[in-house]
Length: 220
Image (cartoon, rainbow, N blue to C red; front, side):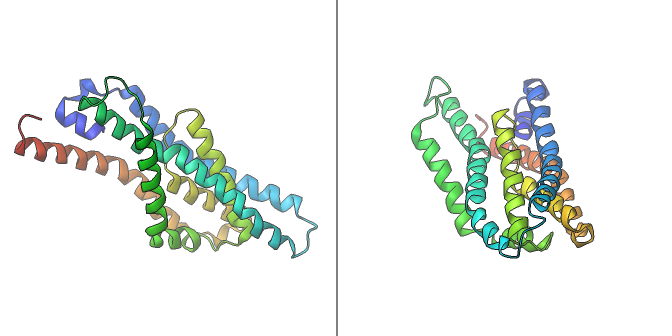
């Protein structure tokens, strides 16, 4: 959004306070994911210090509610971005006189996200599931719980964050809480680098796209 607005109208039209709030949310959320992942795993290990191997069956089952919580947090944050962009586009086009979100926008954005999660991203799933740390059921439960807490918390305060970034950092925290040397920090470094590349590159592409479209359609 910022990249396109800078090319279209200049920096005076950008609400920088809101932009920096988004940037702070995107940077702070993975840090919180790492901290919560570490703390929740250590707490679980402490509570289960006298448990037998049968406790693994418990955590296998507990992944169901923790997965539901993570899915809910994903929808409560990531999907809202698509809803906001689509709705403001409808307002700009004159379809709505106020910022009113119709039910079909909510449904379509939610379904698109669900279908995308189901049908694609297997390389991301492999990277997250085994490329950072070799997860077992207890690790997965703690990762999902930590991620859900951070993302839902961000949603409550209106902070747009990345579910993938938070989950990845939570896995790092869980791995560090179990065995620091077991974390593939090289993969973690690549993910962190991608975090910092995403923002300027997406802004530049949006600005370039608007520039090219305006060159073809000068009235825009």
